[in-house]
Image (cartoon, rainbow, N blue to C red):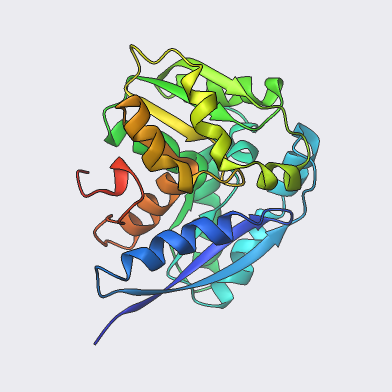
Amino acid sequence: MTRSYRIGQIVPSSNITMETEIPAMLQARQLIRPERFTFHSSRMRMKHVNKDELAAMDKESDRCALELSDARVDVLGYACLVAIMAMGPGYHRQSQQRLTQVTRDNEALAPVITSAGALVDALHVMGAKKIALVAPYMKPLTELVVDYIQREGIEVKQWRALEIADNLAVARHDPANLPGIVADMTLTDVDVVVLSACVQMPSLPAVAKVEAQTGKPVITAAIATTYALLKALELEPVVPGAGALLSGAW
């Protein structure tokens, strides 16, 4: 009998990419593995990517975890990297622990992963010591993301902030622009390229091209989140066409 898994996603209200790229990857996996997936979301209000709105939004994550646990999802993914990283160093651990407890208290225990924690963990899995990073955020928020990652023991050698404040505008950013952005970065000492440090900025169509262009492994927040979801479900983290991390090498 083929097992079906329910994927719960805690999503900013203006995010339209998380529910596109992660299902696309897991549906691609269905072509090569027997497991099947359904997708279920609960939304936290957020329109503009600034620290105040992010903090207010994060307070709604407990409600979202409760709602999704009512659906008896098998795993929950918190789909906003910068919201977690803007709350201070190491906050992804606190968030994951608290939201998992919400599901436990609702008698529907399910593991919770965050895109922030997933990206950090993926970089460690890949043995990355030095990275390059592209983010859509304004510079002050991007600097918070850079600092957060560096406090996790990974040096950010190069980074670019695209300075897009409106979250819907982030979703409209053309992934075809990303190879050109990366081409202007110095990658000599870099182990891994983080093509999108944001689950709202589309990037999946550009991953293979940037890997070929740079000769470096390329990951995104969405790819790292998909890897973490599969690991939490104790499934093989393999997805065709989704870059080095999901190639089966790790």
